Image 1: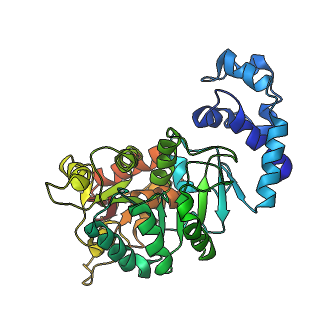
Image 2 (image 1 turned 60 degrees about the vertical axis):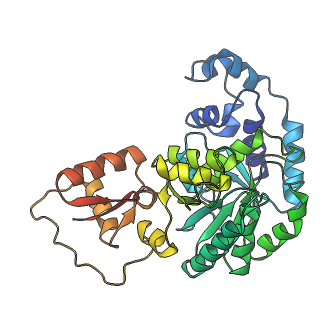
Image 3 (image 1 turned 120 degrees about the vertical axis):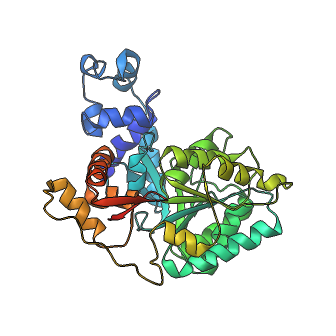
Length: 366
């Protein structure tokens, strides 16, 4: 594993090779073999070219990668490479998913229900009470709570999760040799002790510089089924995360606030622009996501007879038969098909009036 990790780390350290280029390279070869490929072959790969091919061939950072492995082993950090089953699978549907993640903790990042709870650092009492109430109401549904461990709503979400025995993960904008803000060191320990952890794509020594936070935010949005925005202004990290979640085709909910409160302007704007569902109750959120059945089950209509279904259509129909409604991300994960194939199959089933779409990217049998 150490030998494989050496080349996995090295792949993330090559100048001008980011997550997108790394994915392209991994479609051609394993990390070890990438460093053995001739420049003439590398530069022919679309998206790589001469400059990047030369950077791969002349890479000299293996000693630094070895130091990182020693750090990982010393502090019992879990490296999660993009091709490994423990890697957060929801991120695989994001074009810019990190090539390698580092996790301090033992939580399963691929549980069925993951919710990102985010908001302003300068929250109101309304925001505090809303966060604590929602987390408490989610506690009986085995939700994995994700946030950014920042001051304000992020920290409140993590604290409420720990208090209510929910697993919670903090996504960091720096390496695991430090913690920012340092005031949350005790909270981070509590999160790990209660089964959660700290996740980052940054190696040791990388500081929480301003430009690292948008990168952090894309992980928060991408590894979650939905993003809940509690309070935020019109600018800032929460709005960036909400936009990223929309771009990844994930659900976004926002709590409305007073029209004259600057800390609710962002939430109100997201709702106004149809970028977020207006949050009313936790029960309604769970129903929208297909995580809770209605108290009075509605009878299902019989599926249309005499329709010849393909193998892929039968696979998706089998998933939909298990519940009243299923979210598109769950269909993608459980079917094992590409997202484009799933989209095509679902469209065909809708045209045949076999299934119907519901709000919140849910589908059910007609």
